[in-house]
Amino acid sequence: MTNPFESDDMDYAVLRNDEGQYSLWPAGVDVPDGWTVARPPGPRAECLEYVETVWTDMRPAGLIAATDGVPRRGGAGPVG
Picture: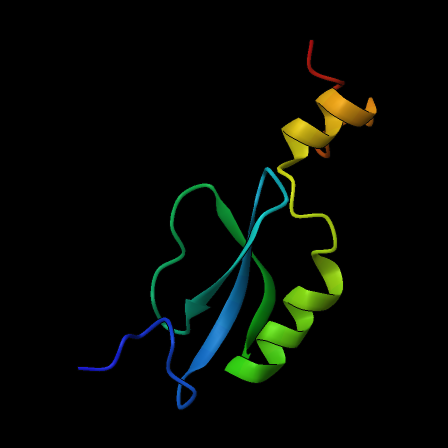
């Protein structure tokens, strides 16, 4: 059985959570709570390229806010 999260033959959506983390998600599978679609479904390679382009800081948004003093998206201020 092929892992649905690693198949080059399937389309994927790119999901993003409130912490600014990204995930590839098999097209047609319900988006889990806490995640939104950042890029509509497409070939896995294109989705990976998108993630590599937009997710340049792997730290969660809360950590970025705590260490850099940058407000979190969604209006929340720095943690602390």
